[in-house]
Image (cartoon, rainbow, N blue to C red; front, side, top):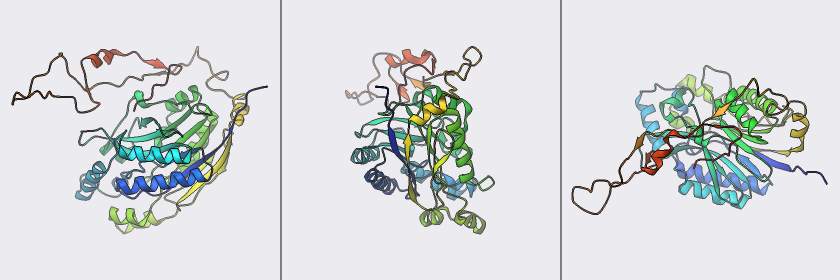
Length: 367
């Protein structure tokens, strides 16, 4: 008997965050995960920055203005630690749904203030945290509040139906990132998108369709594109001017979630600006048929001409050397301790010169 490739039901969640409300956005995400699971979805993708919001105010207000500063502060106060209580709730919902779940969050490192990452959280059907991906390069206004991630959180991860991957917004059109995930054999890829694009650019739905079909063509994977949308709470908190409000209420400015097959055909969607969950059946065997024509990670490429190298080491900003640290001034037994992942122990400093790895190496996912 030959190999058997499954048919996987997938879901793209299109919804608005409970804007700048971590608890409310988490509860909404958990509810939508369970709904998609009841409808048979084995993979569930969410928009960019769903918990607690995406910093779209920079499309409408000065970066240094009082409103932008206030909203950015609220973004940090409601951002998510990975792992943390919000991730625990998402893991419970994923277990209840018996599904792989990819959720966009604004991430902060424990015991820090001021630095955030634009991240995707990856969860397995048994409720375990697989890992995360931190967006490599923040885009436009994101650069004012988000730091770029490193190679330690990049790459495909194993599932019951083969390698799966995710990227966030603009990095889905990064040629090197697309090829790296193609080389790692991704079969289902989740794209997380914001509520809307800048007012000066094309509508979100246009780019989503183009990038989703292009990624499917190059990788021969199924693509789940989950877009955010706009609601009344978000509009009110953005305090837009008349022109900005007209833009936010334009049905073409938001939404557009799609699911695309390895032959580049849209098999579900696009959705309009409304909230909803998009479903599709993904027959993984179709990837074989398409890769027999063009396998850009195999017979349809030339490794003697082209070679891509991935660096999975994360640089360290701060290291502590010496086996003993000075006691506190009150002579208590308490020692100064590294408060977060950016601070490393003496033993960890040996990894500073870790070698680069190519795409065939193990995919050690950072959490």
